[in-house]
Amino acid sequence: MIKAIIVDDEIKGRQFLRQLVDKFIPQVKITGEAANAAEALEAIAEVQPDLVFLDIEMPGKSGIELLKEIPRINFEVIFVTAFNKYAVEAFKLGAVDYLLKPVSPPDLVRAIERVEAHLKIRDQQAKKYESLKQQFGQPFSKITIPTTTGFEFVDFADITYMQSDGNYTRIKQKDGKLILATRLLGEFEEMLLPYNFFRVHKSYIINLAHIKKYTKGEGGVVMMSDGSEIDVARRIKEAFLKKIQL
Amino acid sequence: MSRENHAHVLIVDDEEHSSLLIESVIRRHFSNIKKIIAAKTVKDAIHALEVNNIDLVFLDIELRGESGFTLLDKIKDRTFEFICLSASKDYAFKVFEYGGAGYLLKPVNVPELERAFSRIFLKRRHANDAL
Image (tube, rainbow over all chains, first blue to last red; front, top):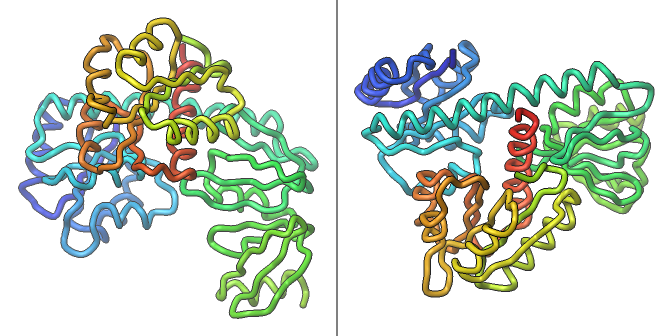
């Protein structure tokens, strides 16, 4: 059973889609509705949906702005809109499909088939990652990094810094090698907490062992052993200085 | 279908610099790609698809005198994923309808290209695992 919510400012739009789903898509259950971005955030937190049908043009925040605000999108998205002009943005955000209103049953069926394929992959990936984590854990000094080609096992000490890149993370190693990890930066943060790493910025986690220089400023700038310069966020400065005991 | 660890990519683009940029990004980041083939016309692309097991196609929509969609229309039982490229936003909705896995605006921005590519290979790898 796929749990879904509908986000649309027009009640008629929500009703129409709900009826269509009820009639043609037995494997999907609509478990929540929202009329704006704020309600949508609440519904997502409460329902933990597998799928969100998302309108784009709504009073207040648009559906696109809403998605950009969510740090970790762990559901599939089908945009449902009266306009086709946002399709490029929808691709960028990783939407599974993009349907024009009024939604036709064949389009909806096609979209749900795509969602099912995505959910299956997501599930396999999660299982595989868990089993690898259990198998290798975070043994002694290595971190398991999922990449597009498999997994890499890297020594904590060899990581200079990690940089957020959308849904991915760029991991810079001391030998200059770059790994593109298929995980969000925030997920690494949890893993790295017990080690000597620090999130100096919303887009950066650095290895404190690789700091070469700190230059004062509003937040300041750290220079890493490879010469990269990374901004420290203003609101993080105090905690950071405490961490490096200045 | 070839396995992910020797995946084959076809780039269909009439502009050589664009094709070369895509190829260089793929080679730099994705060592599992064993073969990258370039085609400038729909005809050459169809031939390349017939003689190779292509997993992923980068498809320029506005080819010289023809449309990338022609290629998609001519291929029955598509077994490859595709990412479309265009200088215009106008075709993106149609690419959703065709089942495209990505849409990149030209000139191609490297991080976006990497992201689209990673997303698709992750998908392909797990799809293969499921076989």
